[in-house]
Length: 160
Image (cartoon, rainbow, N blue to C red; front, top):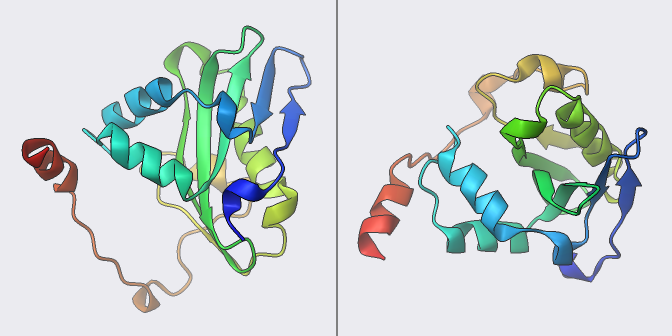
């Protein structure tokens, strides 16, 4: 079953000033791409790569009362056994309001993501945030391997 065939869900913030939605029609690719291409984890990422990543993931947008997108997260998942939490951000102007914590709480509570055997993520500086939701350093790091290409986006930019 294609992930885009699932019904979307929405969660209003307790203060009524924000909303989280999985409705793909609300996503603002310009905001998402702008934040991700300036982030430490995906500097220079091309817009078409962001689009393809969203198309193959569960996407969560955070919106203010005017409907402007102010945050984002996505989960790469099979909805049965595994989930990789990625690209979590809150725009600079809305940070410090607890929106990141709220966003992660909504993501991990999503009904389609319950009872996964393993969740993973990578972070440089938000360990304390994710620890509140049960994330911890790898228990057996020797079992995990990666194939990492940190210059791929720069090469794509030169080629495209």
